[in-house]
Image 1: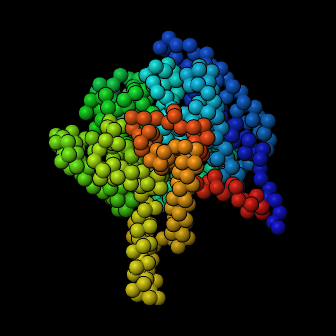
Image 2 (image 1 turned 90 degrees about the vertical axis):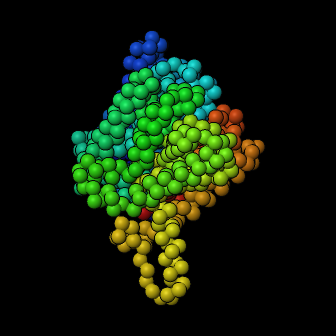
Length: 486
């Protein structure tokens, strides 16, 4: 029996206090929106006050116990608890304003927002106050890059080192080294993130969207979230707006280090990136196949078929979840390809969800190497990414992740089926929530929502959202006995 590990719980509370205060600062912007549109600001005033006071209390009471560095245990606990607490306190405006009935429904909408899933229980989105609509979209934007990463950017000013937090919050396999200063990296990523948001907002505003809708949809696009201000999502907007959103969904699904290298004019690193090549190739192939089927079956115009296919392929692979079509009505091959894309995911190091393209690249290269191993016997066949050999431990971790991901998907689907949810809705809902996509299949498809799912089913789906957003290991590891031992 190993000794119980020494964990700096007071230091954990200290950092969580900072994160909750940051959430309060973001939430306070909704007070301005409510005032602009002549709505009661009381729900946000009360919610913001509670958040900032509670965060301040956690921060001040543990100020003498903050640590200049955190071990791996503390970082896992902070990241996992941060997303839970963000979602929990994020329900306050919904409950106080009575915009969403019931705690479970409010928590579902909040978890869906912060995990950038975009799954909703709302039947009439357009009836909500502007302040609530803005908060829904803002939860996406906060969760997209991760408020933990924002906290890391500020930690150096508080004389706290945040490298472990950054490593556990940044999703995926970060192949490229940006900077030896993690705080500096976090700031630069947030600048790129904000820059993309501003660029899309201006382009959408130049079209048929008003400024409010442009901002909210930009939040949802860059964070690959998918909450819209309209019941029909993006279907009611012009082809121009649909193309703009398609382009920015694709950009948001790219590893943000590629954006960084592009700005630094290090184009060679961008062009040589294997994951980026496969990511764009998958989008191109799936778009062409689906567009061809739409033309064949519905005699759709070439441009319209291409636009509809490109938008939905981009939306699903990046896990954004915006919709212009009810793909449940598409031909069987197109519908099957959409379902496959739910398992693909965007690039590692992006705001997108899912298994991630790079892991699929690892998987297929491992399969190819295994066949060569059978033919050549004792030959050592290294797996290379970007022409660089990859440590066998990374390959093992990737294969383990995919196996656990698929196992979790099966267990989650069985739990939903067990409480009476039909098969297609169950598998579509679970993979959609795990991948942070939003719309799934059948009753939770692009024209449906999650309102009719039983309470236990919603609880399961919220867990799936959290597991998917934190990429399984960050949460699962906390529940192992070894985690709590030295």
